[in-house]
Amino acid sequence: MKVIIRRSPETGLSIYVPKKDLEDRIVESEHETLWGGWIRMANGWVLDLPPMTSDTTLPITINAKRRGGDREET
Image 1: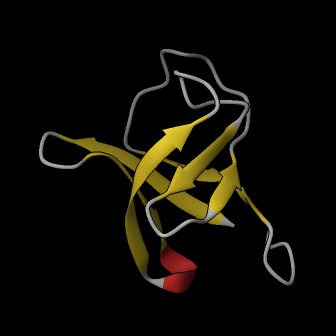
Image 2 (image 1 turned 180 degrees about the vertical axis):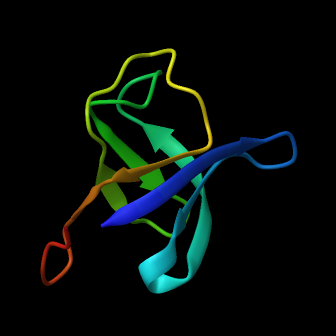
């Protein structure tokens, strides 16, 4: 699924899922640089992010894959 990741001074890292009209904070990540691992949103969703260079600038629109739930979305 397409998601937008951005950074703001007020909330830190956040993610927007346009298909679900959902915006939430990123509260945990597998890697410090985010890329190539999983992230956990404040609502409990876990998403796998594609590998990218550590100097990737934000905001960015990417394809992420949701873990868990009754089905996977791409």
